[in-house]
Image 1: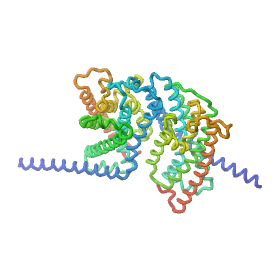
Image 2: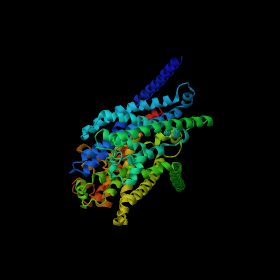
Image 3: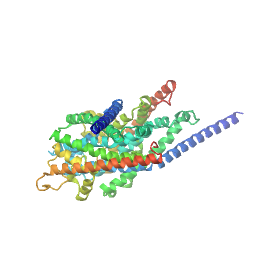
Length: 286
Length: 307
């Protein structure tokens, strides 16, 4: 009886998740201009930085390495950003359409519905990023390190961005005009998490601020995995956890811990914000 | 009788002018009220250029290259890349200013469509050119002011010594170039505005286009370092001329004519300015003509309020 119950519940959860992923994919496919706009925007932003790096260091051999640092930083930034905002956008879009309250009154699991929406966005981003990498490969030489390790970091980054996304989703429920805040967070993340340059350029005080931003750990480990840098820059050189675990794997452990904490904190915050909004009757106000 | 008629005609004309001035004042007041309501958005326009300028500044510090190499690659005449930070800051801020104007005008009628006020606006006795002049006056004054604020903040942080090397005349001349450079962009934005009206969902397109403008106008590095096709596009883009000349006046880098290796008839900056004015006239005529055509077609067919 209990096993059957669990089976039914699990099957329902996955059906909800799949339905939401499908719905998100249908919406995204309906706007191809948005999709290609995103790909070209990433390429143009990358070109700003890469053309600058090439212009200032024409005679230097390190411009290729810096191109890789910038490209992989940009790719992970776009990935992270898409799922980070997907939950907030999911809430706002449903508010605009007037369907948020009906979704919340339905018997489906709301957390899975929102996660499904983020996964849909992430799948689209995966396709977009393949195109972005191909685009960059035409412009500059791109060297790849370990692709499986890179994919592992992407999965952990997804978990982290979902947690962060739930916090931002809660903000969308609470604060009505968050577009300006959205821009500010995005642009400051570009600097604090050293998306376009290595962390090594930061003075030690700024490096400490970087370490406090969860996304910095994603950027640093992704660059190591993809071979853009040799060892993590957020950890002290030759750092070995318990004297045996290498700096890269230590960084992955830190990343997993941060991601799990953020995911739990995000879900709790989001649930609390929704509960409060339902109580106050402000769920569909925007 | 004839005298009486001419008196009435004159007073009617004066009344018309007064009415148009009231319209312009009304539009400026309306725009100011809107700007005041979105102060956070305005502050973004001050701080985002600061962040965008910090990206390459941190990058070239990471590259640890010799200033003379930068100087040679960038085509500086001063022989020293003393003010590379200011070079980037002017580029980023001019880009942001261009974007602000581009968005302001290209989405003007679409915004009115969204709020459902477009038809009543066009049915009102106010002349459309008064509405546009009011919008232009406010937009240019406000956005240039914000850009200046942003430049002062960024220069104070990244290149403080520039304040001691520039004269008042330099700054005044640069400001003039900034203002003149806004006009071709207004014309261009009408052209884009026509696309917005025609193709309903082109916000993503404009969004992408703005980053492309950043590439061809050379905000981080001179546009002459770009591949040929992008260089040609940069050459016909008015923003490239403005940003190159502002840098020439304030930093002593080569003006556009010299950067292109063209022998100028008179003072290069003056020739460049005349060309920017011609650009302004060209884009204003082309943009306005296309915009009016699209608007007329929409009025005849599906109606302006549909989107």
